[in-house]
Length: 88
Image (cartoon, rainbow, N blue to C red; front, side, top):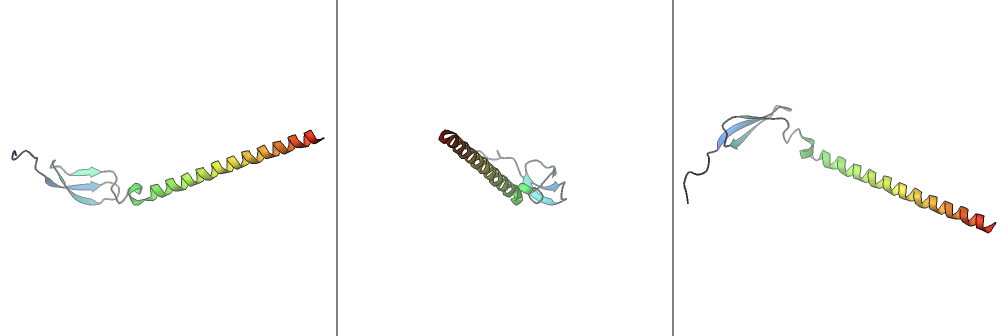
């Protein structure tokens, strides 16, 4: 095996711009990093986004069910009207 082929890791500080939190990470680059959102301030990491998506899916499903039910009721109504016309 070859020796000294891996780059060295340096301890850096990562700053979140949104919530001003500092994290310590290892990186091959010696410079500190600034990020826009971290795990504390991003709603996707907190589970809020998935809950909202699930609610939206449920609402869409119920809307589709209502539309289908309205179509079925309208079809039944038309059939009843047609039968009434035939019976006269």
